[in-house]
Every structure is written in C-alpha cells, then in structure tokens.
Amino acid sequence: MIGQQWETATGRVKRFIVALDCGHLAVYIAPPPERDDIMFCQACDVYQAVLGFVQVRKNGQSKTVNLGPAVAASFFGWTGRPNLGLILWHATSGQVPCQASFLFDWGQRSHHRLWCVQWFVPLTVTPDLSCPHCGCSGRIHSGRWFPG
Image (cartoon, rainbow, N blue to C red; front, top):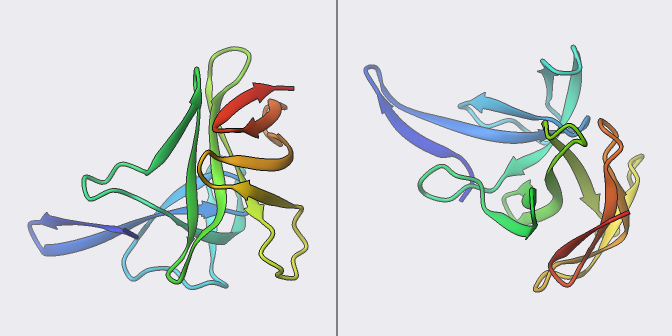
C-alpha cells in the first residue's frame, strides 16, 4: 500500500512517507509527490529529490524486513515499481537511530550508485552497504545483516 488515509475534523487526509535522495525520510501530505519532485530535508537543511514512497501497511507502519539486532530494511518505490530501493534502519555506534536509502539497479540510467538484488526472499543485496550519515557498513545476505 502506498500512502495512509486518516480522518480529521476537516475530512480525509492522505499522508505519504517518502525516501529522499539524501537517505532521510519525509512525510508528504496529499496530493502525492511526483517522480521529479523535491522536498526540503530538515536533517540536511537543503532540498532533496524524492526517490519514492516507503511502502506501508494498512495500520500505517512501514513494511520492514528484520535483518538482525537493531537492523531492518523497508522498501520504497512508485506505483508499478514498488521495489526501487530500500531504507536501511540501523543504530549508530552510540545507539542513536539512523537510516539511509539505497537504489536498486533496474537498468535505469542514474547518477546514483546502484545496488543489485540477488534475491528478495531471503533478501540478499550486493555490493556491501555503507551509511553516508554515520559510516555504519555491512552486507545483507540471506536475510541477515553482517557488519563490515
């Protein structure tokens, strides 16, 4: 499911969680963003390109794959291409929550570094991943996170 609807005093509102080019997430209130939209990233203090929507369950929680202690992944994409990349949820060495986004290689031309999905079940991604924010690195193989 892409987006989450909820009732407010003024009617139904749809909220979208989007992955930004910098690896951070943002909440976007309806109408949904377009592929070429940009949004302001509070964490980076600059405008960033929208990479795609984070997939959410009907209860509004993101669909995550548990990769091990304090590490999980959520997929993001667009309608018709739901698995464009993943958000790696992890903790810094000081146990502070952090996240980074990684685009998958689907044959598209991109100025981004791209990662290859070997298998979705169990999740295996190559090459190794490295968070640009905290430096956390490792690999995802057979649905598990192996620190680098």
